[in-house]
Each structure stands twice: as C-alpha cells, then as structure tokens.
Amino acid sequence: MLAFDYYEGNPRLQVILLHGLFGSAKNMTALAQGITGEARVYAYDARNHGRSHHTATHNLAELTDDLADFISEHNIQNPVLIGHSMGGLTAMAFVRHHKDIKGLVVLDIAPRSYAPGHEEEIAAQKIDISTFASRKDIDEVMATVLPSKTMRQFLQMNITRDETGQYIWMNNVEAVEVSRSRTVFPPFENPLYEGPVLGVRGLKSDYVTDADVALMHGAFPRLEYHDFADAEHWLHHTHRDELLGLIRPFLRAL
Image (cartoon, rainbow, N blue to C red; front, side):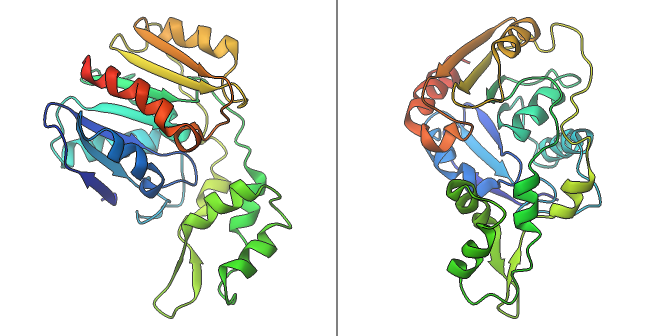
C-alpha cells in the first residue's frame, strides 16, 4: 500500500496529486493546500519514493498499476489527476485504459518517451551518508557530483534518519537506475483522452517542445495549454500562485 497524505476539502471533487521522479507527496503539500477549496486531495509517494514500498524495478506500467490500485483501495470515484513530470507520464499513460477520470492536469511533460537521464541526481543519492554528522557535510560532498544547489536541496528532502540516528536516503535509487525503460511511454492512438485537460509548461525547461504541444493537442481534443515564460521544470514550486490561478478555475468548471 502506498503512503499518502490526505487533505480534507470540497467534497464535490476528488484530486490525486502525482509527484515527479525523486519527489514525494511532501513536495506537493503547498499545491494540495491551495486547492482544498475545490476538492478533497490525495497525494501519495510513488513506489521506491518517500515512505512507500521499495521494489526491484521502476517502470511506467508498474506506476499506472499502482495508481489503479490506489483508486480502488480508497474507493475514489472519478478523480482528477494532477501530475508533474514522472507523475504526469503516469497520469497520461493511465487514461489510455481508464476513462472514468473527471479531468487531467499535466505539468511540464508530454505523452512521449524520454531518455532516462538524471545521472547526476542518481550519483548524488548513491553517496553513503550514514557516517555524516550534519546535512551541511552531506551537501558539501553532494556538490562534487551535483553542482546545482537547487537540485541538491530538492534531493535532500529525501534524507531522514534511521532507528540508530544515522542519515539514510528514503528513495530506492538503485531500482530507478536499473529501470532504463522508466520513461518509455506506451503507443497510443488519438484521441488518447477526450475529457478536459489542462497543460502547463515552463519555457526555460527543455521537457516540452513546441512539437510536443502539437502532439498534446492531437492526443487531448479538449486541451487548454499555457506557457510560463520564466519557469523551469519545477514550476509547481517556483510559480505556485500562477499555477493555482489556472488549476482552481479548471477544477471549478468540471
């Protein structure tokens, strides 16, 4: 069973928030709190992430099966799916075979295959941190393999202490590393999903090209798409208020 956070809200809608690779439900807290006026909200840790179970592999088919199981286990009826990056791929792959979805919000990702990448992030999380005395010490060593301070701070949200007080990584980075097909999107025929879809990309991110936007318009006939000119990939953190300004009316209209 996946670990999750629940936010009591407007009973008219139920929303499931799906985080990106090496994220967690914790990363979606601010977004969840911002939409409780429109919906009840679930945010779960994907397998191999956060507080959820670890498995030997980590691919998109498994993630979509997990989403189906989560919906069934919690008796969630006609949810709205909001997914960032890996979570967006999961949501879009899910609607290939599950059409009882009220709506879809896709953040800075497109329904296509991506190179697995993330070598620096994986290397940083393979550092043995059990003997470090402080997070400052951990950050200094992480900087040798991951120069981006923003990314280091993001990954460090996945550090906790075990029962002996030693620092440990919560993510199962080994499973992610060996699962080279984790970003392979399955084939589909248009339309992929005929319900309402809100898409947002950051123009300083390289995850969604103009060709990808055209692909999405073909896949989602009711697509509403927006660009944030000065946003990078983590737009749900850096542009939370602007994003909520789009998501709230989208949810109200469902």
